[in-house]
Structure formats: C-alpha cells, structure tokens
Length: 386
Image (cartoon, rainbow, N blue to C red; front, side, top):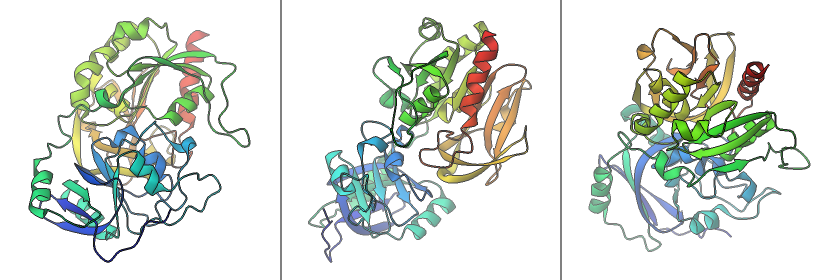
C-alpha cells in the first residue's frame, strides 16, 4: 500500500527539552515514550527494528531510504519488533524487492509500532550527538491533533535506561534447542546435520542470526533464559557457554547474570564467548565496571581495531553502555577498541579461552569481518576436548 499524503502533520516527536519535530505518521497510531538513538546503517532496517537490543529505544535512521524494499518473515531477528518506534527522512514508497511480501507501514501497524516520516534527521542526529540520547515522546494521530504540553511532559517523565533491567523482558520464557544455520543461496536456511560442540547460549536478547552463526560453526545450541543459574547451565553438560546481546543497563542485569558467569569461571575451564550485553556481563563478572555513553554506537560501519593482530574490522554495533577499560583487572586484557572514540570493544582473560566483544559479529545487518569469532569459539571447544 502507499501511505497517503496530506498537508497536515499527523505525527509529532517531542524531546524532553521541549524541541518538537512534526511529520507524517505511519504504522500504528497512539503514543510511546523511549530513549532516542540514531542508526547509520544503509540496509537492514527490519533486522534493526526486531533486534531486542533496541528495547526501550526509538530509532532515527540517518539513511533516508527506509522501508523501500518492504519486509519479509525471513529477515525478522525475533517474532516482533522490540524498538519502540522509528524516525525517517522520507516516507517509504512501494516495495521494490523480489523478497518483499509486505509494506513496512502494514508491518508496523500489525505490530503496534509508531513511525514518523518527513523529519530533518540530520538536525535530529546532530542534536543527539551534541547533547546525548534524549528522552522523547512520539505520537501518531491521523487527525493531527497534538497536546504538545502533555507530550513534552511524557518525555520528561520517562525514567531512562540507566538502572533498567530489560533483559528479563526480552529473553525467552523457557529453554529451547536451535539447529538452523545461516542463509545460503539457493536453499535459504537449512538445518544443521553434524553438530560437534554442545553450547549453552544464555539469552539476554539473542538475535536469530547469532544463533544461526553458532549452528553454522558446528555448535549444538541450547538456549536458556537470562535468569539461568550456574547450576542450570552446567546441567546441560556443555562444551562452551555463549553470552548473547541484549538491551538495558548491564549493571542492572548483572544482579543475576554475574553470579552465574562467576560460577562458570570459578568452577570450570569451559570456553566462554560473549557479545554486546554478554560482553558487558563478562566484564562485570571479572571485576570491571560499565558506563552510560553519550549517544552510543548504532550502525553497520564502525571500525574496530584488534590489538592482537593489528587488523581493523568494520563492524555492526548497537549499544548505549560500554565497558570502562580503566577498571579492567590485571589478568583481563583489552583486545579491541573503537577507532571512532577509543571505547572498549573487546576483552580476554589471560591464559584462558574466555573472551568477548562489544560488536555484533553475526552482522545482521552489516559486514562479515568478524564472523571468525564464532569459528574461534568452536576451535577453543575442539582443543579442550582433544
């Protein structure tokens, strides 16, 4: 379908400082409050909207052509979007991709997510970079009736992400087995037939393509909820433990995640691999601290330097908190840093097969530079079993 054009704004984005952005609404009607971030990726808006790491956030897309290739079930990273809404420059046109089966407007409407188009996203992005990720209220009213004072008050009333544990809200309700591998032409997604390593993946907000990468690397994956204990993990007799991505304040999630990870580290020699929130959970378990970033890292073009090899990888990122490298214990080595701002992007424990990275090596969307990390995890498990 084509989103109808009208001269009157049908959506309004209100920042907590009173700044207002008017535009044309699409997707669901109503109102939502959240933290506002921006994402610089040129592709993969469907994967971004369904990434659980965006829970509690509205995404401003800096690339203007959002929605133009439509949506399809294969590209969902989870069953429903976790991002609270989207902000775009240009209204989406009719889908122009052979894989599309639905217009993004219908997709958002069916899933209760609000979007606003016609916004000066360059101005909005500059504001986020200069002043930090703001609290906002976004409303879509087809009649264009807005209570501006109430919207600003709603934005100011948002509690923010600091101190907020969102992993419990996005994690799986119960354990399950995963055996689907990465997409390949022409078969698409195919089941794994020859698993070699039993892996417990702790779900703090895991994306499907992360689990597919583990399966493609030879892992027989059992996914456990975020609240799994050390005893829950060891009951599966795994060859390795994987800590997934996820949203919210890592210090809040760490209240229950850190004891589990410490149990694994203190009582076993299992390989441990974490990404994104899992990276932050591992760092906390090792004695480091995390900090809230000004506006975070969200995109598919972030350069990260691997200090072990000197190689620079272009990576996908989605995080608003970071590990404070100044707090890393002596036995924990910083392995990766961002070339944008020097923030920590990876650690490893000296002499043990325990490491993590801040970026998303499954790259959905994004480049494939960091996929080798899954293979490194599989190699560590094979060496332990030898």
